[in-house]
Image (cartoon, rainbow, N blue to C red):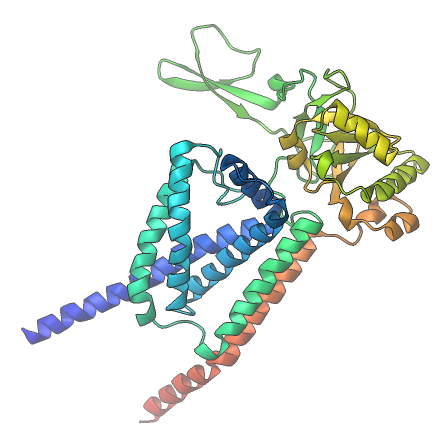
Length: 434
């Protein structure tokens, strides 16, 4: 009888260990992913926190938005690493649960009021509904309650002496990615306009230009669904189900990309359908909010404009500001380029930064940068537009940061656990010799 009880308890302990590791991987992995995508594109969190403050009627906190965006990314990523690797076994579940006790009622309130379109939990990578976000947080909170009780009973990967090194390395890694995403551009572009995308103006002015070429339409008849183009529907007996974006590849694109349309309006709020050039070089200056543009940028912008003029490159400005704001900007900056209006959300999808610059060749995005990342010295010494961005390679930077971070964690692990490997090997040798 006692033996059976002992075996039952042993099985419970084993199951508990497996459950703890499973929850460490799932919950820790979720926080790592959430923190990472927020760090890659901190502008998403800046915009989202701004929406939160507006929805709650809070104003005057704009100066805190960057700090909050980076802080949340660092905390989520670092706590996720703690949980995933099983370090700080007591502190990690407590700290993460404390965060969830804030996020859980907040996401419930947002789900009930729907005053924000989505929570922004996973940036632009995975957009989920407010109720799905609340449900996710309920599951995570329940998992953390289990870890709160059992996590400290299961061994960790790193020893206590080096846990702080893992923590510091994780903070440094996510900070480097976040700062690159804020001051330059996101190291991974999750938006609809990555480098290599061909863009054109929407001739209809409503954001859905050339629907017959860029979209497929799903119809249903007698329980059977079929995809038709806009002008190939056999008869009216078919029932429309949904529209699907086709994203056709362009054979004449230097870098593989997709056709995307944007809506640009002129002075009289009429569609400007020939602003984005389909041939030649062009630079777009983006001003999502003219009121927040630091006036000192005007010198750099005008220098860039002169550089473009000297090299035969067309320049236009795009902003969400109204006619008065554009007129005031032209007076202050002495802008010689033409300004057009574009929806705020489209500007923010094209490139991050206020202001930002996008370089097009034959309507194809070649590079984009925040203007604060381009120095006057670089403009004065450049021979071509490609020289202006030669110091920024997103893929190489991300690979470098990740390689250094991963190699450091591996090095620490080997140094920290070598004695265990030696002990285990010595025991095996002794057992064989017997």
